[in-house]
Length: 153
Image (tube, rainbow, N blue to C red; front, side, top):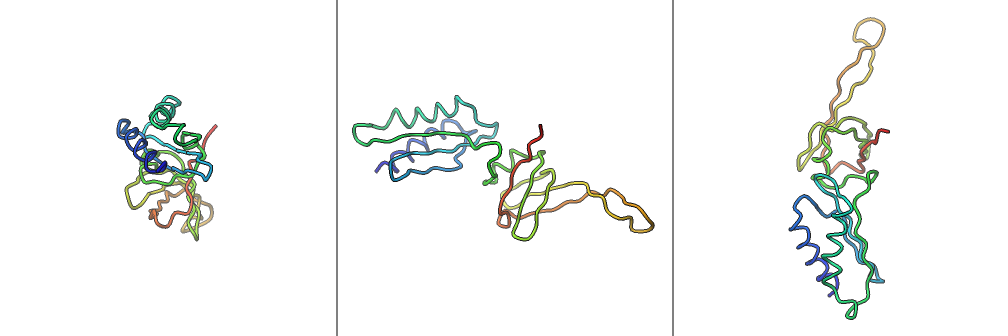
């Protein structure tokens, strides 16, 4: 009963804010409701407060006791959805699959794959020394075990 009600309220709140999208939604055995959001332009405190109010103000604590936490996906949280990858095109990512790991700039993202590009130093084909080459890897979403944005300070 509580889950269905919260799902409806959350769905309505997100419909009213089309730039926001759901990353995770759980209800613990102690009725702790946890909502994790992301947004095409990021998520600010006001977004979290608006979604929290849309849920909390429409639930009756007399009927069911609960606690509610609405947060944004952290800057160091792994990317999970194609929509998150699309909003991070142009940023540097670290992507791990079952048999490889890459660091590069995310240059493309669609519903099925991402494209990473980076420069690497490799031995010259002829002669001594090294040459800088442009590398590119297209990775299927189904192959990605973990992908994170590399933050620069």
